[in-house]
Image 1: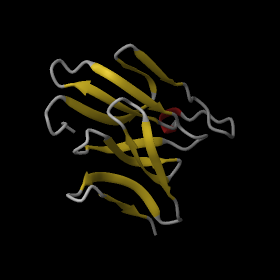
Image 2: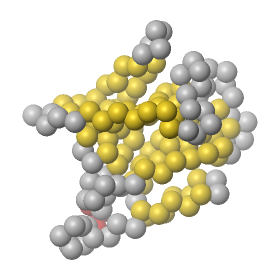
Image 3: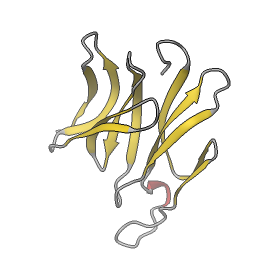
Image 4: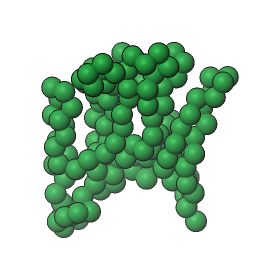
Length: 140
C-alpha cells in the first residue's frame, strides 16, 4: 500500500527459512511438527510487516510475527490510513486477525476473530468515517 501523501509504502507477507528486511534477519527455523515428524514443505510460516521509503524502497522498520506451534502466521493485506497508520489483515494459528501499527512501528491494537468458521482476512480498507472493512473467508 502507498501512503496518502506518497511518502512511504507498507508491505506484508509470509515466509519459511530466513528473511532479510533492511538490517533485520528473521529466522523461521521450523523443520519438525509438534509430533516430531519432518514437516518438509508443510512447515508453518511466519509473517512480516514492513514500512518502506517511497524514495528508494529502503526499510524504515519491520516486524516479525512468528508461527504458533504447528500453525502458520500469514498476512495477506495491508492498507494505510489517513493518519498514516498501517492496517494489516491475515491469520495467526487459523484465527482471523486484524491489527493497526502506527507509522513509527508501535502496535496500536490487534484483534483476533475466532470461531469455528472464521478464516483469514484477505483484504482490508479504511472507510471514510475511519472505521475498517475487512474481507475474508468462512469455513464450513
